[in-house]
Length: 155
Image (cartoon, rainbow, N blue to C red; front, side, top):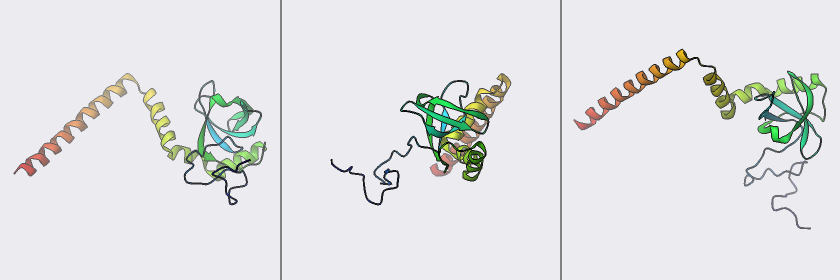
């Protein structure tokens, strides 16, 4: 038996190292917030409340019933809340509110990107047309300013 190169006596109780050389930090663990990849709950944030086996977890969210979900359907996020194994719904809601999960998600680059994707998908044809005109107008203004700066530098 050889000890892991990342093991140190000061490692956390879970045996996971806080070593800066270890970039991967999204572990399947109780309290980990995950995003549903596909299926009827696509795009929802869920919390892993129990691990059933190597392929499935028991997940829960404020707006859905607790049920099992395959890990292939989940994308683990960096957000983790402090809960015990299989908490009551009220305890889960309190922990999510205390950890400010929704705000953390909306402020993350991943969350912002998904919000922008949803907004773009909901645009009407006329909205896309207005957006195109705004981009053309902005590009024209940038071009004018660039021409001014070039003219100043040339003289």
